[in-house]
Structures are given as C-alpha cells and as structure tokens.
Image (cartoon, rainbow, N blue to C red; front, top):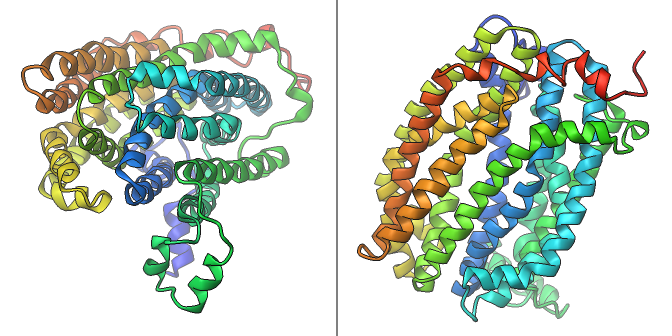
Length: 500
C-alpha cells in the first residue's frame, strides 16, 4: 500500500462513513481523526505565536497570554451560530433532507457574517477598557491592545472559517476542512517570524542556516517587523485566505454541504431558530472565556514570569486536549445524525463510548506530560523562572486531564441533541463556580500554588457532573428533529426558496 492509499484509508469522507448504523468506534474514529488534525493545526497557530513572541520579549509573551482569552470571548459570543448550523445540518442529513441542510448552512453563514462584523467593531472600540478591567500592567497593556485591534478588524475571517468547518462537520465531511486548515497554518508559520521580527536580527535566519549574501539582501529592505502586531496580521491574513477557499468549496457544493447566495438573505424566523439553539452555546463559550478572563485578574497579581508560565501551560493543555475536542465534535455530529435518523439508543452509546476512550487516553497523556514537564516548558521560554512555574503547573494538573475528556464527550452529545443549555450549565459549573473561586481564594494563603490547584479540582468536578447529568436521560426528550428543526417543523417556520 502506497503513502497516498494509507492516508486515504485514515481520512475518509462522508461517502465512506455510515454514522447511523453498524459499529460506533470506527466511524467515530474516522470522523474525529481529521478533526484532531484540524485542531492540531489550530494549536500550531497559537504555538507559533507563543514560540516567536517568547523570543521577542517576555512582555510580548505575557501580552499574548492576556490577549488570548479576550480573543476567545469575542469568538465565543458568536460561537452559537456555528453550533446551531452544525447541529441543524447534521440532523437534517440524518433525516435524509439535504435541501433543508443546504438552507440551514446558507442562513448560518449569513448570520455569521453579520454577528462577527458587529462584534469586531465592538472589540476594536472597547479593547482599551477590556484591557484595563483585566488589570494588565502598563508595560504589557499597549501590546495587548495592539494585538487585539488587528484581530478585531479581521474577526469575520477568523470566525467565518470556523463556521465553514462546523457546517462541513455537520454534513459528515471533516477531511476537506482539514486540508484547507493545513494550507492556512503553513502560510501563518511562514509569515509569523517575518512579520514579528522583520529582516533585521531575525532568529529564523540562523534556524534556516541563512547568512552572508542572503541575509544581507533581506536586511537591506529595511523592514524591521511589527512585533506582536505582526503575529496578529499573520493569523488574520492566513484565516482570510482559508475562508475564501472554504466559501468557494461550499458555493460549488461538490464536497460536503452546499450554500447558495439566493438563500443567504437573513430570515428572521430562521434567526430565532439560531438564537434558540445557539444562544446557550454562546453562553457556554462566553462562560469559558469569562472564567479564563477573570482568572487572568488573579494571574495579573503575580509577576510576569507567572503569567508567561500560565500562557505556556494553557497552550500545552490545548495540545493534549486535541483528542477530547475532536471526539466531542465527532460525537456532536454522530448524535445529531442518529437523532435525525431516530436512532436514539445508538446516540447514547456513542456518548458513553467516547467518554470511556477519552478518560483512558487523556489520563495516560497527562501522565506523560508530568514526566516531561520541564523540557517541554523549556521549549517555549529561555527564562528559568518561567520554566519553573510552568513545570509546576503541568505536574499539578496532568493526571486530571481524563476528566476533561469525559466532560467534553458528554457536552458534545448534549449539543448534538439540541440541548445546548445543559452543555452551557456544565461548563459554567466547572469553570465559573469551581475553578475561578478556588483560584481566587486559594491564591491568597497558597500563593501561586493556589492558582494551579484550581485546575485539577475543576477538571474532576466537570467530568463527574457531565456523566451524572447524561445518565439522567433527560436529553432524549424534546430533541430538534421532533420539534422546530425537523424537516417538517422547520418548513413550517422557515421557508426555503429551493423546497419543492
């Protein structure tokens, strides 16, 4: 078997997957594996920024730590649109109604454009106030503002591409977005060091072995880089290119779900459907983001070395959590399609299977991270104090990673069933009612250790609460296919120009 055939056997498109009958494990694997790769590429965006900005200055590394949750908050407020679109597309595909799926996708992209533009304007105008609320010190605050303003201008590019991936995932195609994401990441990685450092004293030269004439020619251009603003420009531009490619794919409609310009005039009835399904998902995302943002108020009371370590630790967590995020999104799609096909028991077993797998896999991964904590932290910063704090953070948290996997698995199932409010409440309990208060209170008597222990405690609570809530079986009642979003129900409230 050649390399191309081996890759094709691992990454299967929707035509090679049956999500509503037969085995559960392999379809979930084939659906989730490309999402893992997509999410890995997403993390590479963040790691590239962290790597290069850490070599630019400790202040820049600290600034990206504070900027990230604000970015996440802006995206989270619009997140409900992509979740609603993914769930509706999945359930309509499961019910065999591709016309409704196409209409839902077209409307979702239209509302995504409107909401992200409004949020981008809001973020640009109020970024100074948000930074002040975080209590960022005067050496770091201007860098946070610089990064955030560039990001706010390009928010539609960032969010629009995320919606493209969500709609394709709801259809069952996770392979096409993976390839588009790969190209975008390569572009970002190439642009990052150039736009941050320019051509003078660029550490990329030594890494690539450039010297003499080549380096002199580049340096002669006089471009000295834009620092942290350059990192933001690289990310936004890369996502804009990816969004254009994604829109071309969806307008053509020969791979995955199709959108039509004629169906993109915002329909108020459909808008209320998006609000009903998506608002709790936005609440969930915003709760996560706000808890992280409020946690930064605690982090800001410590020296820059601690905030740098916090940024390193959370980015490493984002790598180890890739399987959990991917399986959560895979479960969301499988649950939606199985509910659409009236296979509710199969939807339940999909959730339990994913939770068991994630508990084992992430516990093992967390153990490995604990063993290699110091050398891993050392990759991202040459500052010994930052490395020491990051090492402690990783070792304290590692063995509870499996509980994050359990929570992600079941919240994915709740979203796929249309019960996005339950997923929101679970996240709010774990992050807002456990992690933040523990960090706030414990950081007094325990100093920085009080901040670190808030993470394992909230991880365990989140996993246990999600499991117990799913076992209640209340998610089986009132799912979307049986109500407003069914092929019949949505037709009574939202008319599609292409329905026969």
